[in-house]
Image 1 (tube, rainbow, N blue to C red):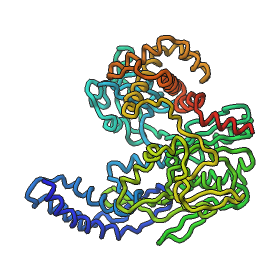
Image 2: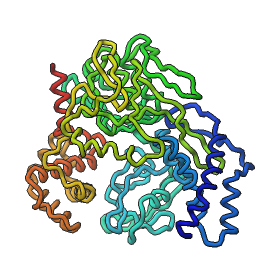
Image 3: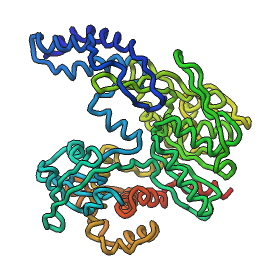
Image 4: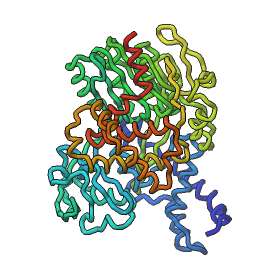
Length: 531
């Protein structure tokens, strides 16, 4: 079907889709990433479905009806705001699982390297470990479906291992060139929100959250209590790259830091009356020194937490200006199993700040590029007065803060821009280092078992003269010449490589611990703790 024919039908489809959108009204319990049953009954047949069926049966040319319907609905959503979205049925389960904090599967991380599927890590105490699967195993097939030997999309491979708890998957493996067969009974696999929680220095705890799901508060409390038993008096809470999620979990964590019945956040919209969220109970960490780390990837629920603690002068916010998402979505499930996330209100910090950055209805492209513009204009590297064009407010202690464009940190720490890896080659280098760390781990497994701390691992790889030639060889296979990089860039590669080896040894916590050894922002936070 040519472009002109699509344009003829599109206004009709958009109008119908818009009419359907007016009927969305079944509100679910959570206002950030909630999910629930369909609003429409199974027997309901919409006008859009009827039109698409007519197009399928009667139209002069062959048309991808599913794609046409998706585009029509998506165009309606695009006219609203950047965060109101349509989620096809095939993608909804994975999105919901991430917010639930678990999925049903076998508990492995795998990677397709060339045309071979390798088991990268095996979840401790998970179904795959119980069945005898090991890191380094080559997956030949799953339930008689061939996996290795041809380049296969990782999403497709994942489907072979996901499935209802109690169901089985029969796997053929290759281990040390010897074939093996195992049967794995699927179970409940947690998706952790806490990447790392440890004592980074005597008396100073460090916790990194990657999202806010329905299990985040529980995970956070388990780790907070453990660190306090280990002597924690001060805390660094790392929210960099945390794109948000469940509002309730962010509110509950804020409650652990704020005393009395202090307001944490309130939400309000045209059809959503004001709802206040306040501290309700004595918190476990209401008085200890607290530092929050944020950056341009910190959004939504992360900004709720950072905004509340900044407004009450409870924490020192360090890093770079956050993303700027102050819109609240409810999720509505449709009769075909798809869903929309519809913006229903805005959230405001305790002093009344809206953190939402400006946007133009229907212009999502510029909105999505706004963070890239921060790099282009230099704000990421040097700070910039453009971050303070919003309305001025004062914290409860009288300090000036700003609304209308994210949370600006109390202490600005620039992005480390010295001799960065060229942008167009970053993804290539990242993939090479990921593969290199995995094969290095396999080749040195016996020696690495003796390594017990991040400092030991850093010393181990620094002393190993084979590391750099190993990286050069793998890079050359992808037409990358490591010798063309500056000495600083080469050092960055080595550090990232060592962090990835740490991940092979100690999963996400090992990776974070290794990165923290050389992280400028973490070092500045530790200096601030000593003041």
